[in-house]
Image 1 (cartoon, helix red, strand yellow):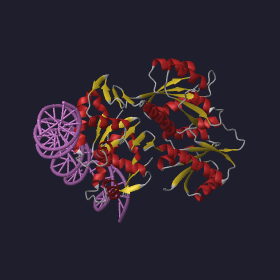
Image 2 (tube, rainbow over the protein chains, first blue to last red):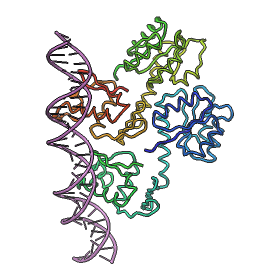
Image 3 (cartoon, rainbow over the protein chains, first blue to last red):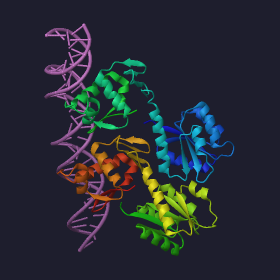
Image 4 (cartoon, each protein chain N blue to C red):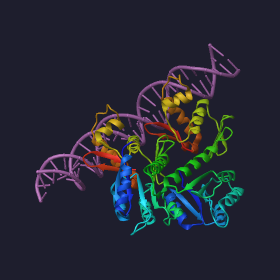
Length: 224
Length: 224
DNA sequence: CACATTTGTGAAAGAAGTTTGAAATCGCGC
DNA sequence: GCGCGATTTCAAACTTCTTTCACAAATGTG
């Protein structure tokens, strides 16, 4: 997975440093902004995967900043709010916030929530029967696959195998498991069949073949 | 569940004894420290599940101790504060505290708060088939491991060994026991095989290798 | 301190799993 | 039923992982 960038917006430097430390330990790259203006500037200059936004800030509060970010971007936003602080959850979520974290939080909690939101956003890629993974697009309804916009002609089993794996990306399946899930519970043939289909898929998908990964001793998985 | 350990940090011995008694009645094991230095030493020597930290202490106050603990550990921290004491809630929580308890408290309240924090930490650690230990993340479904967000490529046995140990963190297993649990009850090979896998795991996990500990004369365990 | 025991390491043989190419079989449309 | 692409089977070649072994290093003991 490539490095992911998180923008921290908080008026207190101490807090930014603390959160930044947590995030960097977990492998995120961090950008910091002390107010909404700075945040908007950074957002327009850098690709950002998520924003951590303090609700209570002097110039513009988190809600206002959230609204302004939403005018220009769909980036996931997580609110940070202190325990007992006046906090309108509904308002935050209505404005397009994706989650909120109540201080105090442990590093683990912060990372877990952030990962959860990033995963959820990932899932939105699956929309209206279409799956998009960078240059690879799978259209379930139309039963077509394109790589970098160019159509790739797949056979029936190839398509179903790819679709199944893509729909369950990140999870490893054994060959037997795939035979059951893709070929049907009553299929009795040889598990090596899966290998051959993976081979032909990889051949046809060219660059996009990197999505289909062999997990030694277990089986195959799709990485998106 | 194996016994859980709580570290009590308070300059007053009377208080430590009282809290210790409450905790031991509730089935916790207790460690006691009279100041921040002692606390840090004990933390580095023992696996601790939570820290109860008095705010008002002569040498270093609770905030300072909290900050120093956070430099090296994600262990949950609960502040203890006397009613009416000058107490900056926000500061404590910002520094990474997980909760605070106002003295005087009943045994019931102490235990309830402590359990609540431990549950929360547990939940965050085991989320959706993922285990998180600071910078080390283990994804069972995807059979992937990351350290500080960077993927680490493990072989089948390495992964299974790590997963097993992590799922039973805090418990020591003999090599023979691990052979049975990870390799299978009917495995007949040499127990030194485990050593080799531990070696390669440690090599690949880099910093995170500290989680896998040798227990001389017994075997190995995972410390999270 | 010297001894016995346990643990760590590197290299290499051995075992296991995966990929590949070719050939056999299936099944649908004509 | 025939033809042809799709699917499945198979086994050899290949890659990767696992285990073992010998020795070094560390730890505990009398």
